[in-house]
Image (cartoon, rainbow, N blue to C red; front, side, top):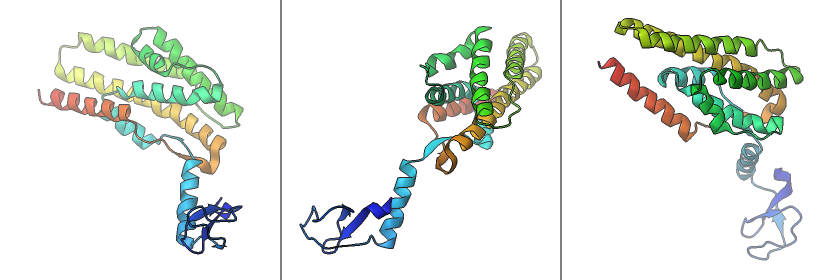
Length: 218
């Protein structure tokens, strides 16, 4: 709170509201913070107290498409890491994300992931259409498309299957994150901010862009 601070009348040093003497010059007279400085302090305090958790649908769609569907690894990692605080359980986000490449087991982990999100949302009174079983069905479809692409001989068919697979994984991400965003709003209100773009997130998208360029250049 900016009311907890004041400025030295002699050197303009900021001091706690309870200070009797300026710690910089020793002067004992103070005045209120200037409007500009008060606004800056308030903005800093707001940012410090905020929770950077929200991930907008547009960002997720763009990142998922540009990464060629690889973005789901980052999404599983970052959201599982965020959810550890809510569940008060020990989470291993890196290993959790890597289970996406493990046949069958990936379905159980995705079911667990989306069940946690659904439970938190409904527990907070947030209406949601998120259904863990539906997410598992979509993951099965994604796996099936991946297997079918191994048998595809036509480049056109291979590209089509790849695009459908990206659409399926993007749907899993956006649908699940929508419920999680709604929970974050209920949980943190005005303190909620968009999650910053992480280094790993940027690298995955960059790698996907390179793959897209090489694929389309053939």
